[in-house]
Image (cartoon, rainbow over all chains, first blue to last red; front, side):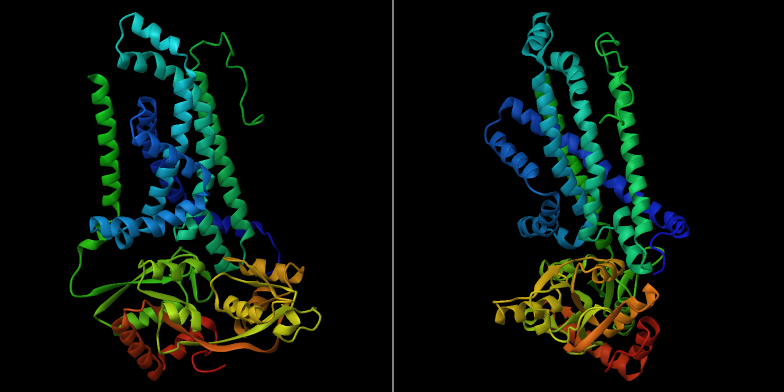
Length: 244
Length: 272
C-alpha cells in the first residue's frame, strides 16, 4: 500500500470523480426546485388551515424533521413501491432507477424543511403590513405579492442558504442505495485501487468549494434584496464565510 | 378569485412535476420482447469480485461469470444493479432484483428466505485473520471477549452470532463494519481497533500484497469451508435451473476455471 497519501494519485482521481458531480447537482436541483413547490403548497395549507390536510402536513413535517435522512431514503427506496405498486398497478419498483428514488426522497425531505423556513418567514411579517395593504385598496393576493412576499424572501433567504449547503452534504447518502455520486465514486475508487484517502480529500475540496460558492451567492442575494438601501445594516457585514 | 386560481395553479404544477418525475424512469420498459430481462444485484466494493473500474463500470469475477452465463442463455438478458453489500439481499426481498451475486455462502438462515443455486462457482474457505504480530489466536474460543470485525448480513456474522448463542457468558464482540475499504481493514487490525476478522486466505493474501509487506496472517483451522452460490427469490426456480445449467457447462469446458485464474488469480472453482 505504500504511502497513505500521494499527490500523483490525487490528480489521477480528479477526472474519475468530476463526472459524478452531475449526479450530486441533479439531486440538489430536483430537491430544491420541486422541494420549493412542495413547501409553498404546504405553507398555503398551513396558513389557510385547510382541514385534514393541515393535520397531515403537521405530522409529515414532524416526521421528515425528526427522522434520519438515511431512514427516509431506505423507506422510500424499499417501502414506496410496496405501497404504490399494488395500489396503482404500476411497477416503479423495477422501472425507477435508484436515482429517481433518491430524487423523491430529497424532494419530500426538502419540502418539509423549506416549508418550515417559509412559514416562519411569512409569519414574521407583522399583520399590520397586511392591514396597511388592504387599507389602501389592494386585494389579498396583491398584498401578498407586493407587500408580504418581498419582505418574507429576505427573511427566508439566510436559512434557505444554509439548508442548501446541508443538502449538498446530505446527498452523499445516496450511495447506500446504489447511486454513485462523488462520495460513492471515492469509495469505489478506494476499493478498486486500495487508496481511498486521496479521493476523500478531493471530495472534501469539492464540498468546501460548493459550500463557499453557495454562501457567496446568498450573501450577494441578501445584499441585493436589502430594501433599506444600507440604512439599517448597511450591507457592510463583510463576506460571511469567516464568521458563520 | 385570484387567490383561488393561485392555489389551483400551484397544486397543478406540483401534480404535473410528480407525474413528470414518474415518467423519468419508464424509458427502458418499452423494448420488451421474448427475451426476459433479469435484474442482477451485486455489490460495488469487493475487489476483485464486484467493484467499479477506472471508468466507473462494474467489473470483477461475479460480473465476468454472469456475463458468460448470460451468453449461454438466449432467453434471458441480464441487467446489472450495484449497491452496498448489505442492501443486495434486501433488494432481492423487495423484488428489485431477480438474482443476487456477492460471493454468497449457503447458510440455514439464508436458505429459509431465498432460493440458492445448486451449482457453486467459487469455493469459500474462511479463516480467522489477525495482525502478524498478534498473540496466539487459533480458534473462535480464543476470540471470546475480543473484538472481531465483520459486516452486517454476511455469513461470517451469522457464524459468529450462532457461536455467541452458545457462549452467552463471554461472547465474541462482533463489530459490524459495512463498506469498509481494505486500507481500513489493515489499519484497524494493525493498530488494534479489532483483534481479528474472518476472511478467505486469498483475500488475506490480496491485502498483504497490496499493503506491500506481510501485515496479516490467517490462523488456525478454517472457520467455515463452503462454496458460493448465486441467490434467487423462492419462486424463480426456472431461472435458477437455467443458471445452474449454464454454470455446469462453463465448468465442463474449463471457462469458469479460466475466469477464476484471470480475475481472482488462481483456480478457486473446485477446491483450494
